[in-house]
Structure formats: structure tokens, C-alpha cells
Length: 451
Image 1 (cartoon, rainbow, N blue to C red):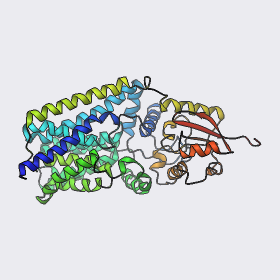
Image 2: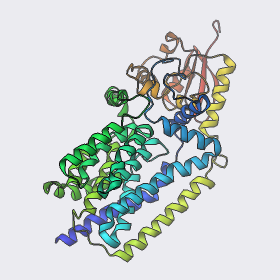
Image 3: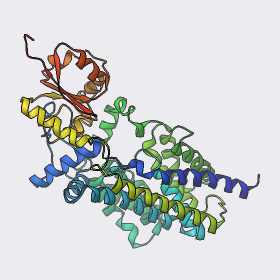
Image 4: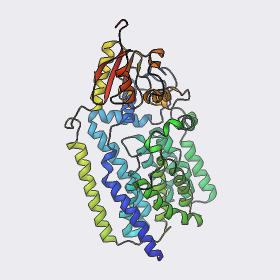
């Protein structure tokens, strides 16, 4: 097989996985637990007109330090959701997708007519990972793509990279942490690259917590590592999956360029290696792999018209599917009661019963944040240096501990996922009775003594 044929085969793998990813984009439009508590935190900050520095939502960690890696995004989410929830969906999901595609097109522009389909392809690979939801990580990735464009520009605009880092430190600090390394790609001398990298790193300090936030980011990743393995985006990609196929194709593109000491390939290689253990890092690897392709890292030969027409057709299908998700499949028209409505009913039951110390495991308690005191409220606990409570909640949810522990901890109610092991055992318990049962959420309270 000649080089041109091998390049076509490699591109076919990238495009095939890309088109499948584009068609599956609407699956990411789920208002999940993370989005629910982030909106509640943003709403609290807008109402109180201050950054939330102490936990005010949970009875387990009340008053403890609250380091929010994405406080600015939370505020924007809450503001848009107050105007129109579907407006929040469209803007906070579609805008970063468009920004990523536009930035990758600029990076791939030397490819000529092949640049547009390649940009769509790499954007779709990014979207194939479980990270792509209505959440701040997507905007962190979009800012990373913009930083890639600024670094490659080589003019005055490149020196805007520190300002981008300052914005990223407040939108999604974990993603912004990678921005200083993009200085390596700037077409400057070594002292110029070092100065740009130092200024970009200094821009990361412009957040309400200063340098302390970075110690917290690293520490939280280490403390919560066992719990993170249960989350899809932190798991290794399966090879038959779209992220797995995309990673394999990008590795074939990047590794030969590493031997030539291509700067973009040298940056992409660690992300690809990390992506073998956690899909969380794959989008950054895909973006840097696009930079390798844009620099002529491989002789990718395309039939421009056919690929362009096919890519546009897939994008049109994706837009139609997105419209269906946003309008035809709105919660009011969907079958069954949305989990957010069930959470409101559960909160009403807890208030009526006077429950002040409810147990609510991750995935359920997220929807109760801001409505009633919760057992674990996300960042104040999940990312806490004090640790322990979130893991206890996960253990109880899987029944690794006796449900009787709920009483010994002083819990006066339990809000659990309907159909979970804990739900089953509480339903069979002689000490608890069901106060509400929904399709997704059930509420239990202790039985009065003597019954």
C-alpha cells in the first residue's frame, strides 16, 4: 500500500467516526446532575451578587471552603436558564461547537479545499467523547481551540493568549491549565516562547482564589480518583467506539510526526497517552492532531467535492436532529415526568415532613441543590480536600454498607433513585416507609416508633 492509499485509508477512518459522531450529537443534550447543581450555584451567585466561597447547600459540608472551578459559566447558565431553558441549551451547546469547528478550520486552512471537511471531521471526533454536554468543560475546550489559533498566528494577536487564560481560569479552570503549553507552537524565538508561556501562566492567577485554585484542581483529581472511575468520561475508550476509533486514527497521524519533532505532535502525544486511560483528555488530543494535519504532518489526499457534499449532508442531518431535540422532544411533550419536576415534588415532601438532614446520593442530590439541605452537593463535597462524604454516599447507594447506617448518621430522610439497590432495601426495611415514589426519584422517611 502506497503512502497516498494509506493516507486515504487513515482519513476514511477519521471521517467515518466523525460522521457517526455528528449524527449522535443530540445524545449529549441532557440536562444532567452536573448541570442542575451548577445552575443552582449560578442562581445563588446572581441573587446574592457575590462569588460563592463557602458551601451553603449541604448539611454535611456547610460553611466549608467552596472552590468553584467554573463560577463564571455557572452564572451565565443560570441567567440564560432564567430567560429560557432551551435558549441555554442552544447557546451553551451550539456556540462552543461552532467555535471549535471555526478554529479547526483556521488551523487546517493550508489544506485548501480539504480544510472544511477535515475541520468538521475533527470537530465531530471531539463531540464523540462523553465530555460533550451542556457543561463548562465544552467551553474550556473551545477556549483551548481558540488559543491554538492565536498561538499559530504569530502576530500581535498571539499576545492575547494571557487574556484568554484569564477567561478560561473562571470558565473552566481544569481546561485552562493546558493553555500555557500552547506557547510552544508560537513562531517565536525561545525567549519569546518562554515569555508568552510565563504571561499565560500568570493570567491563570486572575480568579477569585488566585494560585490556590490550582492546588485544589490537582488535589481534587488525586483525592477523587477512585470515584471518578465510575464516570464514563473518566473511563478508557473502547476501541469499537467512536472515541476509540478516532484515537487510533489520530495516533497514526501523530506518531510519525513525533519522530520529526513536530511541536504540535509532541503536545498531542501526552494527551493521546492520557486518553488511553481517560476519555476526558481525548478532545485535546484530537484538536492538536488537527494542528499536525494542518502543518502537513501526513499526505492526506481527498476527493474534495464528494467529501464536502457528504460532510454538508451530515451536518444538515445533525441540525435537523438538534432541532428535534430542542423543540419536538421538550420536557413538556416528553412521555413521563421529568426528573427536575420529580425533584421539586421530593423537595416539597421533605419540607412538609420537616426533614433537615436527608440522605441523597450523587445523581439524585444534584437536582435538590438549592431546594433543601442535601447530603452531598457536588463541588463542596466531591471536589473537597476534606473528602469522604461523596464516597460514603456512593457506597451506600451500592449497598456496600448496611442501610441502618442512615439512622446512625442522623439522616431523617432518604431520597434515592427509583429501582436502585438502596431503593429496594429501604422498601423492604421495617424502619423506613415510602413517602413519595416517582419514575426516577423515591423518598423514604423513618417509620414512627411503635409501629
